[in-house]
Length: 210
Image 1 (cartoon, one colour):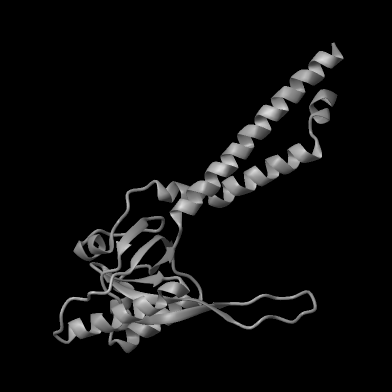
Image 2: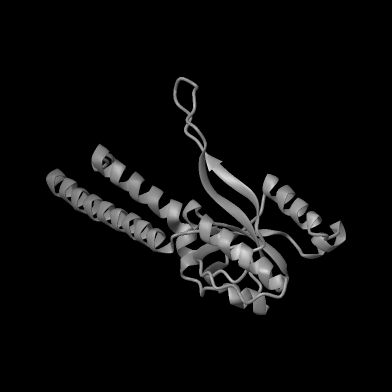
């Protein structure tokens, strides 16, 4: 046992901790990134998305946003920075009803333009021409988002019964799956290196004891 603990150096523990944290943090998203992607057109054609589904492609239609997100930094003295816009939650149609889509702030101008074109289409105009590529994962909608989502549908004329019949609301959040794969690979690599280093040290400790 003493031989085991002599191998546990501070540097090795940090390597193990950092590698483990990266692997755990990115693990779920990494698994989702390996799933076949469902496109927005697939969703319109009848493909049902579920919690954990991977979605990728050009957004087909958008019916405006029902919520927005802002972030801020809380400082040690109790003060906080100003609010920073961090994207909107748009309502998008699917064959089963509707879903939420949380975009990045950089995509807001194009999503707003796509919204205008979608409403124009509903009034007899041409198909939307604005292309907004989006990739993300479907998650269960929670908290106040559900309230805002339901209020928006109510304002559109849907009854509580009709909204309930659409099932549990989901939100598709933007996810950079390329970055997720890199993080996961780095985490695994650090764990492998930690394992190799421990094996070498453990062997050397055994030899010195002999």
